[in-house]
Image (tube, rainbow, N blue to C red; front, side, top):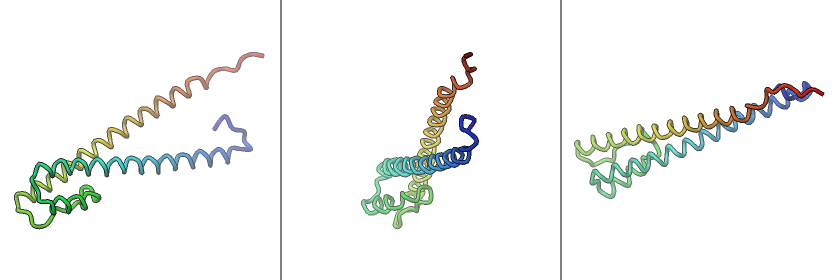
Length: 128
């Protein structure tokens, strides 16, 4: 903000605020999509190991959009229901880890980019 004249300070502040909010919205949208897709794939892979019926797999696929709140398909034995619930929980934890790791990497990249871009901004003016 120091590089903007006082007449344009309000405009620069508004642009800065708008871009910050836009970045937040895009981050949530992108990381949310990654969470949904990864959870769906992880749950599908775990469900494949449980030898579920086609109907149970279909019900589980429909529930996958709820992430950790996904319900166990009806009509399963008690032991299979517990295994499916554990598959839902572990798929959620693994998807969350992936999203958290991605967010951390992107944060570090942002910090490195900011450091690189700001590296030359505090140079003294050349004498005339």
